[in-house]
Amino acid sequence: MCGIVGAIAKRNVVPILINGLMRLEYRGYDSAGLVVVQSEQLERVRSTGRVAELEQKSANTQGSLGIAHTRWATHGIPSERNAHPHISNNQIAVVHNGIIENYEELRTELTARGYKFNSDTDTEVIAHLIHSHYQKGNLLTATQKALAQLIGAYAIAVVAAENPQQFIAARKGSPLLLGVGNGENFVASDMSALLQVTKKVIYLEEGDVVDVSLDGYRILNEKGHEVERPIHISELNNDSVELGQYKHYMQKEIFEQPQALANTLESVCNSQSLVPGIFGAEANKIFPQIESILILACGTSNHAGQVAKYWLEEIAGVPCSVEIASEYRYRVSVANPKTLVVTISQSGETADTLAALNHAKASGQEFTLAICNVPESAIIRQSKLRLLTRAGPEIGVASTKAFTTQLAALFLLTLVIAKTRNKLTEEQEQTHLHELRHLPAALQKVLALEPEIEKLSEQFTHKHHALFLGRGVHYPIALEGALKLKEISYIHAEAYPAGELKHGPLALVDEDMPVVSVAPNDALLEKLKSNLQEVKARGGQLYVFADADTHIKTSEGLHIMQMPEHAGYLSPILHVVPLQLLAYYVALQKGTDVDKPRNLAKSVTVE
Ligand code: F6R
Image 1 (cartoon, rainbow, N blue to C red):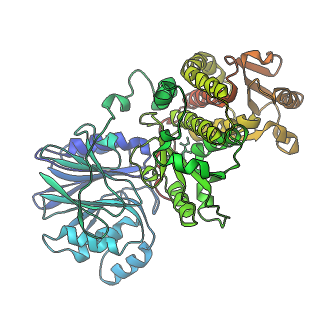
Image 2: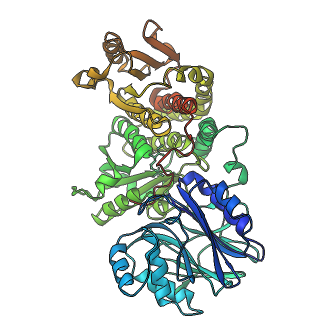
Image 3: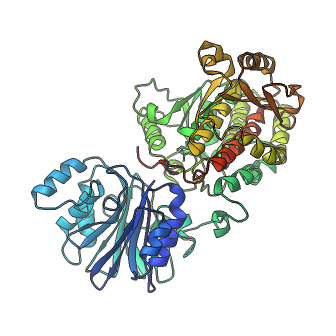
């Protein structure tokens, strides 16, 4: 989704803006632009290509105050005229992430007052609105007045041509942080954009407006009162957002999974037993009261939730439902105040997940827990309890290491809830802890399948469709494998629980339909084997990732990729990895933009 960078310094800020935008490219975008304030003029450069093109176009642009943007189209097609910054009367320039819901009404009003619109965006109304309140020297007040008229979500940065000493930024519903430098200050949508200039960060809160100048900043809360917000020192380092030896971020992130898991599990793996406190101080009080669990998430994070449902019901004996956040937020549901509402999100800023969390709270469900990869994100801040996955920044749009670390976190939650409900003996706890400690090493073995999977991917390059099968706790893994393949290779892929095939989808099976299956050596193995025979008998080509001890052998139409020994409950964490690699190599064969697949954004901060 849209990315914002703003900077004020004693040096030329254009390279800082461009570098920042490059760091935000992973969020997904279709055009980019910047404005600098120079000799009381706004100098704007925009481009519909990559940020590298914007860099070329702005080679002769200079200024020590500027704002910049990558746009992911919502209102109006991707085009130069719709790219940000939007300017009102050569005076006010604005970049915006979010959606203004009442923009049509405001546009009509502003048009009647003589404002001319040059784009189809909702953002342009913000520029004109600010201009309508603006008089030299009152950029802060003018912005505050304009914000009060907006309904919707925004993170914005604003400059005025007459004022080279100041810019204003604000957020509500969309992420924005303030980077504090030495005699220079910045804003950005996320920290990766600012690592080049500072590690000092302030996470702006809902409704904050910040007045930024060379040597300082003033933060005003939603009520307009001046407030102090703590400065954090970011733990991110430049290496974590560099590609290093890898061709793509997705490949890098797949291979980072053993370390990401080890980091996420670090505190528990060194301890002898699990305590609720790993989810926050109040967990001791909340967990014993819980009667059920409701998991809310989108996309890949939702698949993690679906795996967890099997664990939570089987190991902890707690009823669990998993809902797609964008549906739950608008559904009339029966709320139980003794439900633990668990949101799962890599970014912690997904608009639908955030709204679903607030919907659950508004319906009287106050016990909330977030599993998230971004400290200080909105979802973390708005939940009572939390567990941070420590996957490090995930840049590739297709989620990989975030997913496996979410699963590890959800397994910890399962064990802690099971303990609270007296469903876990000490011996069982020790066995599970042992398995968790072994997980990074087991995953390393799975990664060794890479060359084999690379070869296998050639079979998929010219296919238009694929089926993915799994059973039980591995059905969500099949869903995840299908999602990975479609989002980066654009091959249409569907996942089914293998037992469901003969109720319809079997009709699709012929020699042109590759069928991918995960085959763990679990209680459903024999059932799965029968389902695979049903495919084979209809001439389907089967590609099966089978645990070492399943005794499924390669034969005509049945290709086996040997996984390590069965990992028990943790098996889904291992079985998803070859499916990630398969999607990666198929996309590579097809020459798609692996890290930035078409139409998709990394952080889905609009509804
Ligand atoms: C797919 C993918 C998306 C995200 C979804 C939720 O690879 O990454 O489906 O999982 O947009 O995002 P988060 O986890 O940030 O809430």
